[in-house]
Amino acid sequence: MRRVLTHAVVAMLILTTTLGAAPGQSTSAPKVAPGQTNAKKKAPKPYQVGRASWYGKYFHGRDTASGEPYDMFQFTAAHLKLPLGTYVKVTNLRNGKSVVVKINDRGPVTPGRIIDLSYGAASMLQFRAKGLERVRLDVVNEPESVATISQVRKHL
Image (cartoon, rainbow, N blue to C red; front, side, top):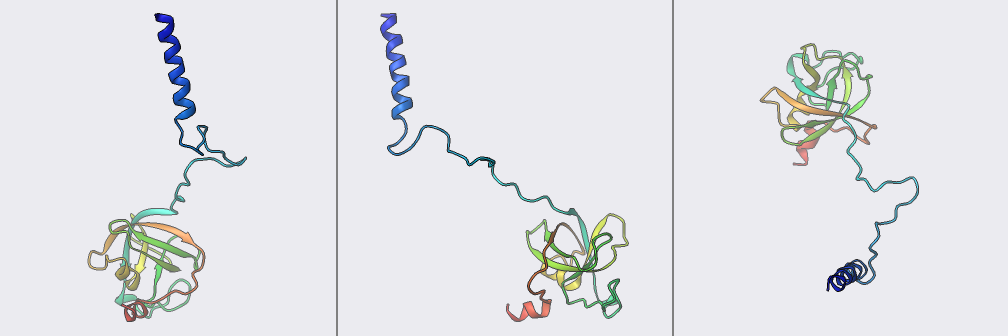
């Protein structure tokens, strides 16, 4: 009797492993090309995460570190280390909104902050009234066009 049960259990295991897959499906793991893995792609690491602030009217028209006049309605920013002319995608970690800005100035001068955004960029990220927000910075290739807040509002 014990021998019959053992044979029955073994037969059931064989049947479930061979017939368990639907017709046309394989019971083996999916095939992967050499040099590739099955792991999901991870999001790229951010360049920097930290607190952002913004600056506006007081500096409007003054020269920036790049030599161009500061326009509070352009999507620009000040950063301590990134090369002038670098484009950075800034994402507000509170609401998920993001904007691409051009680094054209040096700053911020206040310790604990990683970037000072223009009034226009802060408006798009919806933290103009709050003044400070936690953000993620990702360096990006030069965008086809960098809009101003006044150009964006025309389309709203």
